[in-house]
Amino acid sequence: MSWETVIGLEVHVQINTKTKAFCGCSTEFGADPNSQTCPVCLGMPGQLPVLNMEAARKSVLTGLAINGTINLESKFDRKNYFYPDLPKGYQITQFPVPIVELGHLDIPVGDGEKRIGITRIHMEEDAGKSMHEGLDGVSHIDLNRSGVPLMEIVSEPDMRNADEAIAYLKQLHQLILFLGVSGANMEKGQFRCDANVSVHQPGTPLGTRSELKNMNSFRFIKQAIDYEVNRQIELIEDGGEVAQETRLYDSVKGETRPMRSKEEAHDYRYFPEPDLPPLRISQQEVEAIKAGMPELPGQLRARFESEFGLSSYDADVLTQTRELAGWYESLVAAHPADPKRCANWLANELLGRLKEMETDVADSPVSAHKLAGLLDRIADNTISGKSAKDVLDAMMASGDDADAIIEAKGLKQVSDSGAIDEMILKVMADNPQQLEQFRAGKDKLMGFFVGQVMKASRGQANPAMVNQRLKELLKA
Ligand code: ADP
Ligand code: MG
Ligand code: ZN
Image 1 (cartoon, helix red, strand yellow):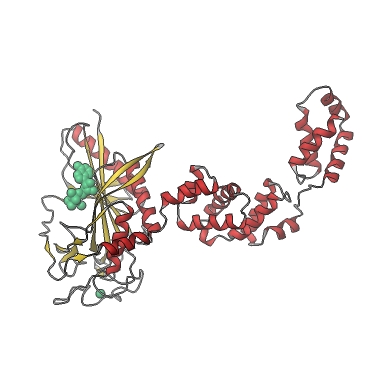
Image 2 (spheres, rainbow, N blue to C red; image 1 turned 90 degrees about the horizontal axis):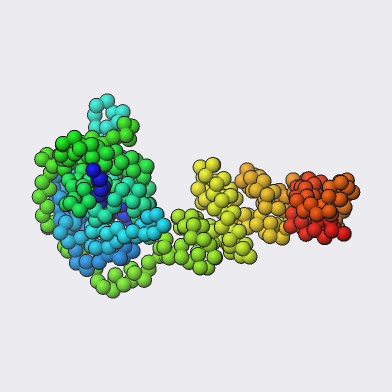
């Protein structure tokens, strides 16, 4: 039987406001437990929430970036459930009328693109954090996260395999970072994904889905989806039925297991939040937010292709983050003669070395200005591209600039035609037999002569000049 996988994703993004969604407490990550709390986010009775409009504006910005419809009036609701890290006994969220509806994201699939529908983006508040580990059977609760603003971005069930799901998540993650609306650090829980997964026979109604939670990296999300798809197919082929349930991914065992089934599932008894007025945004405000939209990844890629003549592959690599793209632009500004050379040296040489050092481009020991200094020496033929790689190694290690290293290592390329002619004539004199054969028509020996001259110069002769002078002198 041929099975089709269907995936829809719910992504929770912590919005990077200074203060929480409904009170003035700091959202700073990593503070002492419970040091950033107040009666509102501790859920004390009688406390009134007041919306942080910055969180709403950042949600609108995100909605515009996914071509969504902005609801100028949206509403808050209470989602009721009991959990120790939810002191109010309900979460403020948006249910029937979210701030954004009906957008989409185009993701790369094979050589083309695929459009993934986004059903809605709604605002809500984060819960606190329960801590169980290493506490001798006691649980502790940290409410610093309680009330941190979230956007929940809900996709349509448009993805057909784990790779599409990961492509969607990476695209969304990059977009969020470019928009500057969240740190989106997955390890810090600032970008979290629940995956809804089902299988069915193409042409039949969608199958029953399970919802996978507890995956904090792209790798784990892919593993969890692949595991779950196989589990569902085997289950159905063995005559069983998929239960609609929430399953936790165990990254140590590499499997998903049931957390709660729909029968035990909460009836959240959503009802309108009486303590908050409707969230109103004027059309002018939406326009102002739109006017402040930063350059998005797709636009940046297109600009790098047209402005700097980069291949779409290079443009893609260099626009992975805004920091990297900015670094590339500084490099081109300092070495404007050859943007393509800049791209090659940044993408292939510098990034490769940084990766080995597990260092980000922001912390590169070689600055854009210094790398440009090295590229200048290649451009003016002081050194060959080959020895430039050794110079870059030395620059990475010492932080010195290219000229100092070229000088100290005596790497200066010989581009003096007199000196090159001298070497060529010596090589010709030392190899009369080969010279005779060459002159008799054995063209292949050109490579031999180039090699001999390069060797005589200890690799420092300018290869282009050696080739050119050899052609002339060997003929005579
Ligand atoms: P809930 O609020 O119970 O999680 P929603 O209707 O909001 O339910 O759906 C949540 C997610 O599940 C959405 O991302 C949606 O695309 C996805 N989804 C819905 N039906 C299926 C299905 N049959 N298979 C896979 N994903 C699905
Ligand atoms: Mg859900
Ligand atoms: Zn507070």
